[in-house]
Image 1: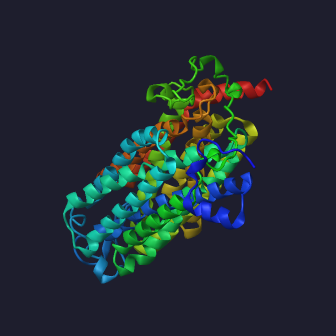
Image 2: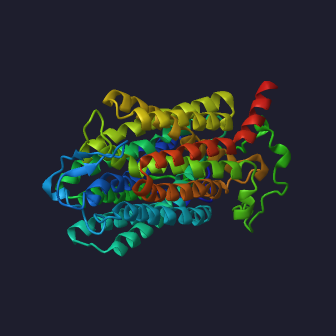
Image 3: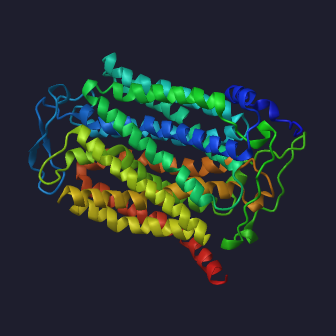
Length: 498
């Protein structure tokens, strides 16, 4: 029998019950349970973020109570929209002439709070029990997603209500990402993390798809249900995490697989932080400071690259169903439900892109090269989707999936494998307590871009149309690629010397 470690008393109640009836589980069994539970956890986070994009067209309505809309392509001719009578007038205050801007401000409220909270959440996550921290975040998120939907049942038309609820929901949602990345990295050592995390990161797209299906299916019953059901799902998953998630191997008396990640492939070692990790009074390494985390080689470049990558990804997350609903395909406009269902294919392409990016990163050992290539290749496909997607459903679907493939590939790679590798960088000299902080910095910067993208889309689309929105996306993609050019050049030089 293995001796108990200091942390072994932190076994979740549900896992203790399973152990009582099944005996000790193997290391691989725990690893599989962690992957599955964290996958379900973040699927819930993303599913609960999707309803705003699905209900946008219903909240906006046409402001006149009849079924007509305006094409956002070319001449802007009037096109008939087939909507149920109850949905045509929209929902005050979003059905006025500045409705799109107000919807963008609600998105900004949520995402700005999420971005700000992310920086604090990572720092807290390195200091608190991640299982309790994650559970509180999930249950809090679920409650406030439900409260947004309750605005329908309570007939709330006060703009401030939706902004305040969105801000608090964003703060709770910020607990998720740094926590799950740190937990997964606790169980997986160095090597081949790109493919594993590329597959695992499919939770982002699976959550988007699930959230879209649920929200779109419930629209006819009233848009409030599109929020309430994902919120309740989130609360249920929070309890599942509390009772069954094992945060780290030492909690169940197992050795840690942690091994500091080497960076010789990209020749950053010469710039490594020279100071060994500080020790606390009980001999354990202390959590890294916020400033020291920023100085880890590669963190700044990847953080700002993710700023622009998430700006693109979240613009699609929050506005793609609205864009599809507003843009004729083969001469007709789709209903909000049809537009939501079609938008799922962007995330299907994103799943494949995340897995492929992780696989190529593992094979080449050159994450920056992979991320730069995907980001720059997204530009022509985004341009073709905007300019040729209206011609037929087949062309629209193909270009949408290819756009999702190249947009989500680097986004998935940077937020998972790259964050985990930098959080266990050899400059930390074995201090594994930087994972949540580094993940929070990188995804926090990304989340600032995620907040700005949807907000600017609301204003730009209302004033200059979606041609200007796509111009913003092209510029963002090019900038994201340029930010990693220096790291990519070092990786290519190292590959030539092998």
